[in-house]
Length: 188
Image 1: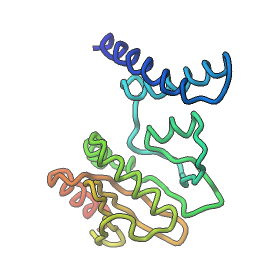
Image 2: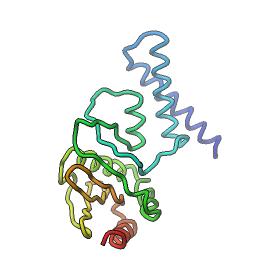
Image 3: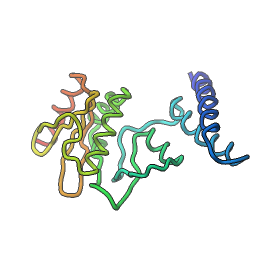
């Protein structure tokens, strides 16, 4: 299985390298080195050689920077945000405090559309958008479910300057209902 991952890594690496290399505006060895580093990071993540965590333990605020750096691409692929203290609300992740919610988030975020939805909801909430998806509904005392259009669900508690991410789920009923029941047990 490990050999298969390395073969996948090499095939992805070569394809991404040539695309980045052709698009680069640098010259000579620097062009080759920057293209290779960025392609290696992306290929390692896509081949599963670098684990993709579902929850974070730090406070993050999304960045509006349009410039792409290796770090930004790397963090975006892993579902994280770059801190920017001059903008929006802070995000505090509380998912890691309950093993059942961690498992539910990992199960839901295996689906790329759900992960994309959850990332979008987090970013919009941090920017101050109080209704970032296709709807929101209260679950229990202070806990709100935000729904994304592709099935992502984000459960939060909000205060003036901090948003607590309590759980993530998908549209699949068993996953979603487990998360709702667990949140009611903890926060009700």
